[in-house]
Amino acid sequence: MSGSSPSSSPSSSSPSSPLQQWHTTASSDLNQLKRVFHKIAMTDNTQLEKVLNLLLPRLLGRVGSNQRNVNILQLQQSQTTSTTITSTTTSTSKLTSKLTSNGAAMMGAVKNLYDNIHAKLVEMLSHIITRVK
Image 1 (cartoon, rainbow, N blue to C red):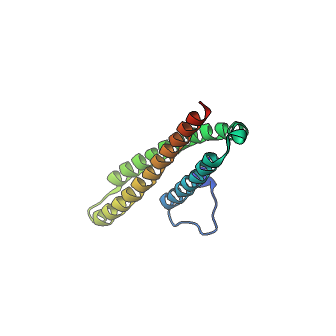
Image 2: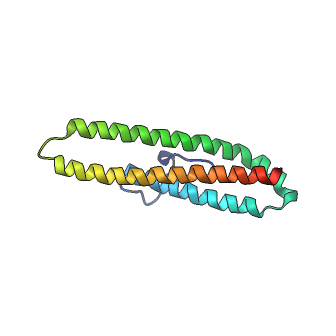
Image 3: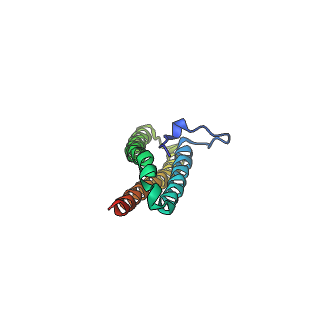
């Protein structure tokens, strides 16, 4: 359940762009968190302490890696925007505008996935706190 950055997740069918790779990785991470949350919810109270001793450090680490990925994504977005603005010419402005809007849409989708990952992590931690009380 460890968080992974898109550059560290090799795949046999490599996505065509780095943003698609970020999207694939984030989507996979979210699905994995959903499975882990379901397993926590189904764990009986006698086994809960053992499971939490193994899981809590990883969950907390995942919160940090998720925020790190969001920061990297935002940095790349700001660098892409400034590069596009400085390199646009009149002959390529239509193409650049289309690529920028497609990139912005994909960037928004990836950002949304990371927001969903964060929400799932918070939900998991809330569930754990409720069960431990």
